[in-house]
Image (tube, rainbow, N blue to C red; front, side, top):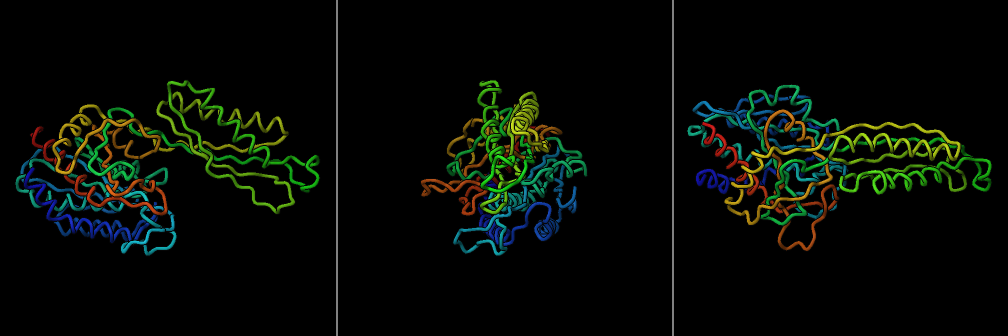
Length: 392
């Protein structure tokens, strides 16, 4: 472990340089071209076996140790978001309307830095390491599922992954057995009323008033229909009725997200959301269209692997606290990997000590403490070596 940690310390500046390069040239989900090419070239230079266009735009690289053994998979995502960056930093995005606002540039740099360090130790490595570089985590149906279907987990015995987490202080590692992240679904709604003159509402069916009533009514689902000992979130994030100021809107488009942990609650929300929509429209004499799309399932961490990481993380240089965290209502398609093989997904604190508060993920001024990449790399690296050694 000391050799691994020394190699990672020596490679930290290169890790930072990789992260900042990727940050300047972000590519959003399902549009990644240069990023996977960069990743593949990096691994090829190390002599790894490389597959490109895995499941679409993913990259899978394999490091084979000098001795036969089990296979550990490590995953990092690399897609950006359609956000105009507002940070004033030397590595600011050079692409208008796109930025790495969730830390995926850091995830990729972490895994590439770790790949280089493990490669330098391959003569002592018992087993194999598969580096899964995944495209399109941010947008369902995501990149994980098609990559799995294309064989990225073939021969893999266990998988580990982490997310750099800016709201959590640098030095903290967050772990949790079982459900750590929620299912993330999408509801799309079109409410059809009857347009008319703004001065004569009695001749119309006002879709804006109707849609507003629906949004309020729908909030009662979590408050009054879901078991209070269970969790659910309903957020309507898009409400569109583009009209002149003096015209009553004929139709309104709504889009929202539903987050749950349990399948029964997920199904209940899907069904009862439409029931509320139907009743609201019926009361006003309007009609509707409703489409509910199931996104990523909940992320369920396996108990043994989570305990394994929690125990080893406590002795990682730079780690001050290993915390059992509450579940998060955010979603992640790492869930699909955990449905196939044992593993765990944890959070690596990335909030700078001098920050009183951190800008949230998906914010135009999001950033993180780059030292978190070194902590993440050491934690993933130690998990890899220790797992291979213990299962030799």
